[in-house]
Image (cartoon, rainbow, N blue to C red; front, side, top):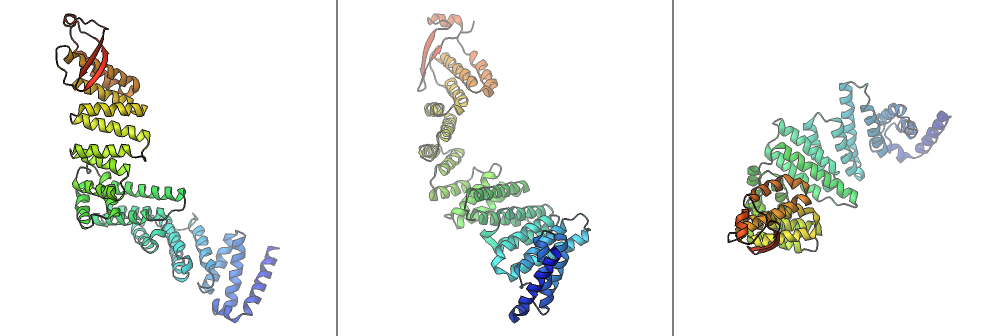
Length: 441
């Protein structure tokens, strides 16, 4: 029955096209045969009988001009892809099929401009799928697709292209500059791709993350190399936001490469264009690393005061501020910042209590009892620290053991009318706390 329907449809199609002279020109010098095999393969193709469709498509492809019908080429790529994946293919036959597939794609690109973008993207994906062992061909072919499609390129194509670049670099076929240029170009185009929904945003984010991971794994991203490459570029365009973001991203990923003027200047450019709490926080990190504590405090407080940051983030910022202040002998400010971290979130309680304990242990308290009483308070906070965060138990117990050695002897405490378990208030170094007397026999 299907054969009868197929035969009738061919007769109808032949009759229609034979009555139209212009149509004969469209279907080539042997238009009747062209139309016949177009009808044959199309009918089989619609029935998903691809094995029968393929030989008829081959005849249609040989007889018909590639401009006769777009489906002749698009259906052809589908049929050839199926044929390529057959396990019975020899390596030579498979290569011939892949070459034919690429020729058809090129015809789609050259002769059907309406579908040019999608044809290029599909060609790039098939190149990667079927030519994985030929990094040079993938690098060149996908690079041409990216150059032609620009921001219309599918996000994963950038990753496949750069992966090929990394392979060629490992083989010695590309230089460090080639790899860096490929990375910069791909990241810059990827970052400009317009998105319509959250799914597209996540695809771009994943591709950007994969690119960075590959770049770091090559070993090209040494701090010395990055500074040598990006410093003259930044000096030539110090107000270029995209360049500044690229510099900050690259230096931030490189090992031990965030304590330099280029990184600081790039983040300052980002902050100038986008004074967000995140850019303020990065300035805090950079200024504190350089020892410019005044500016560091200025920017972390600005980040904390931003309405964009949430409570949990602010608590973390307070704790970081406390740490920086403690390391720079600003004990009173460190104490205040640590208490705010505790008040805002339970997450940092253990670490904040431990920090306050360290502050008390190092506080400049005078007098025989005062110089020892501070260790009672320090011990109290170490106990709080390990109770709040069991992972700190070992460090807290070690500190408690050290502090205990400074407790006054029982007879000395007795001279000051103090006994074990008695309440006591300690005040020094701008800090004040109530504690319990503890002695050593």
